[in-house]
Length: 183
Image (cartoon, rainbow, N blue to C red; front, side):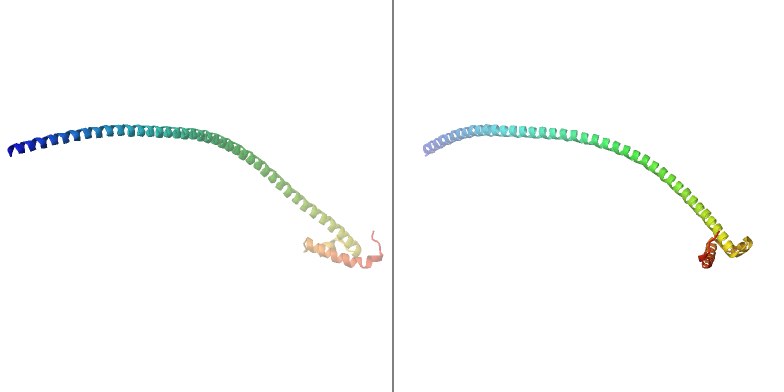
């Protein structure tokens, strides 16, 4: 029995050894397969990463060019805006100068108009006095009055009342004079 046990043990040991060798061989094969697969995966990953990096570099280069162009455009816009601002300032300065001239002209025109209005008022007063004098002479001649009686009749009257007085006297005087001539 012992020899059977020994034989069984030896067979068991041999089988264990064979199984170990098979497992070792399978593990080596698996390791080789994994290395091959890893190499292939690494190669694919490297190719993919390389493509991604190239794409990223191209995209970044494009964005950089776009940004450079935008910066160039912005600089030109800033330059144009500065020129427009300078032109606007000059226009404003010119407009202020024109406005000052127009104000001076307006002031002069207003002054001239005021002087003309005062002159017109003075002329109107002179005309009125001349007309009043002619009317006074007419009324005095028609009614045979003296200067003192005229002065007494018109002493407390203003110019409008005197004009009314002359009108009423002229109306009264014109009735009998319709067929007479006046010297």
